[in-house]
Length: 176
Image (cartoon, rainbow, N blue to C red; front, side, top):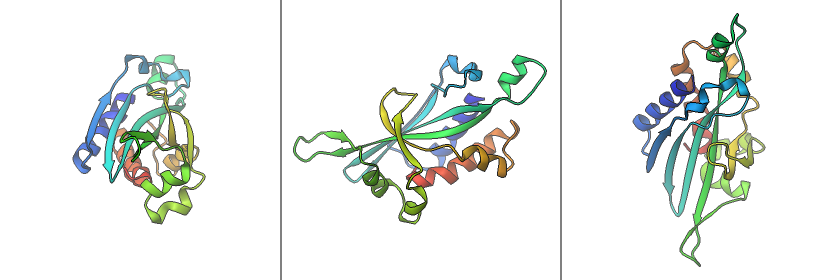
C-alpha cells in the first residue's frame, strides 16, 4: 500500500511540476504498517525559490486497519493517511550558506499562497520528520482522515486516484 501511494505521488509530481529534484525511497520495513508508526519510505521533492530551498518529504501514516478475518489481509488493507513534511533553507548573506528557517510565520509567508494564509495558520506544526530524523514542519494530518472519508476514500480501493486528489488538494496549500 505504501508503495502504491508513493509511486502515485512520484508519478504525479514528476509529470505536473517542475521540481529541482525528485526521488522515491522505498523501505522494506514498511510492509508492517500495523505498528501504527509512520512510513520510513517517502517521496522527496526539492524546490528552489528565490534565495530559499524547500525540501518536501511525503510519507504515509497508517491510521486504521480495515477489519478482516486474518492479520495478513488486515495489514494489506490498513488505511494510510498521507502527510507532507517540509524544511525550508534560506540563504544567509553573511555566511553565504543555506540555513534552516524555523519561524512558522516566515514559512507561511514564503511557501503558502496568500489565499490560504488564514486557513493554514494552526495547521502547520513543527516536529521531527520520521523519514529523515531531522526537525522541520508538517501539514498537520488531524483532519485528513475525515476529509478522505468525506471524499469516499475510506476504503483501500482506488488508491492511486485518491492520493493524486489528496496531493492536488493539500500540496498546493504548502506550495508543492
